[in-house]
Picture 1 (cartoon, helix red, strand yellow):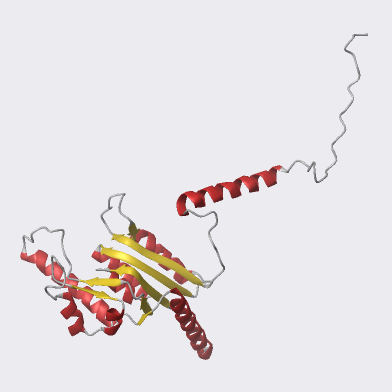
Picture 2 (spheres, rainbow, N blue to C red):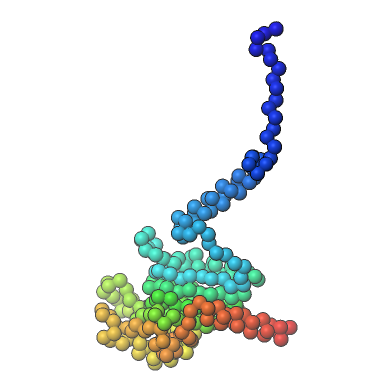
Length: 259
């Protein structure tokens, strides 16, 4: 018999106690790792360990920074890309669980045709929508703000109203000027038809001289935007949500009556 030929005695299993918990299952490890990764991602992207979520019949959409159109803007610019917004709007229209759209705006404007396309799409939705101008709703942001069923502006927010501009280049051909003039008329018609402002007052604000430092136009703030009829009401998130729920209820009642 060999010297090391000793029988192997199995080690007794440690019973599961509060001091000695059982080894977690691989599935629990995976869930814990996923949760840790999500928390790290939230801290990196949003500066918070958790993102509050709630089941709601309202979809919140933001229009921030500069509205990016056919030309890609530099990476340091904060942008809203119209090719991202438009599919979302169509998805909201198709989703039966979403009954209303809350639109948060803080934009300096941007591509005119892209902004007008977003505004037309919002205005053509069958579901009620409410917009809030926060900080600023400048330039082509004005048509987007008035495209909703009902619009709000916080008291400190401003809206800059000015004619369509190029990037400082001289217009070299009469046809170019004609095109800009027709595009401006499209914007004018949309704003007047989707708000309470008169065409006379809108053009007065649009072409006012001496208001802006380098060009013609007007900057209106909070109550002034409501006074001119451009925005419906001064208010914030609470008022906007309440109004949107009212619009949703009215739409439900009207559908019930038709049935």
